[in-house]
Image 1 (tube, rainbow, N blue to C red):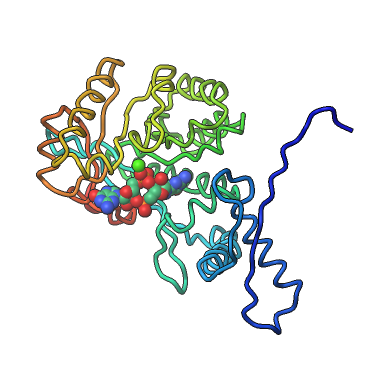
Image 2: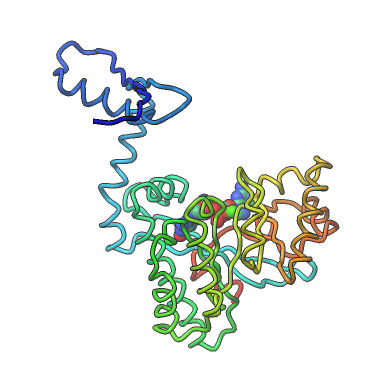
Length: 312
Ligand code: C2E
Ligand code: CA
């Protein structure tokens, strides 16, 4: 049927028979699950169905089986971590981080479920829920005549497949009668792999509507310098891995200094260092011109009610 030639690649899933009574169709299913983990890879073309894979798949189905109910029962909780102005020690913002308050397993950290939710799409619902919780929290504080700082929320790249994103966010802000800049949108670097012209268009639309952006995880695997030249970010957040080596590695310092000056020259883009854990790091960062910081040195992420008791 086709005039082109095709390159055929074979991928294998291997399931050792440990118990001779296991039915053949189950063994085939397991081998198939193992095969799915390498399909399309250029590096390996086979995988074993072993204990590690069994455990991973089990954990994933444990989470997917419960995620809808968890959302309905409000088990996902909003935690907040302050953003601090380094020169004054003043709190100038907060970051919204999700935790799963599981009825039997206790508090589950996002590392265990966010990557999975990014793959199965559930992140769209969870993010929307966290944005709503954030707005509702801000509204409560404003009604109580506190003077809250803006709160940043994480934004998965999947949201940029949705052309309705700007109107969804605008109606959310209208629902809680909040100024747009109170909800800062944090994009992770992986977001920039997505359809870029569309991403730039949606970001422009959101900026025109008054939303504020930060680029998260700057300095990890893929630094999109090109995107920095196309859209304006209000803040660039340097990944914790850079902060970790800032004291001992002179090359990290050079890199950091250059990035800070690049952000300055972009206009008023602020730089924030993530994961500051001690005073030594803070001092070096300040010397390099970094304006904002976040990390256990200042405060750990706190449940929203504890956050307001301490910081609002
Ligand atoms: P992130 O947005 O870069 O958040 C910073 C992470 O570093 C948080 O981990 C925070 O608890 C941790 N952290 C902050 N300061 C320090 C420190 O001084 N030392 C150390 N060791 N860690 C510090 P967490 O809460 O586990 O979140 C991990 C990641 O999960 C986040 O990274 C973010 O990418 C993602 N995430 C969290 N909540 C959400 C959400 O609601 N939606 C989406 N899409 N992603 C989320
Ligand atoms: Ca980050």
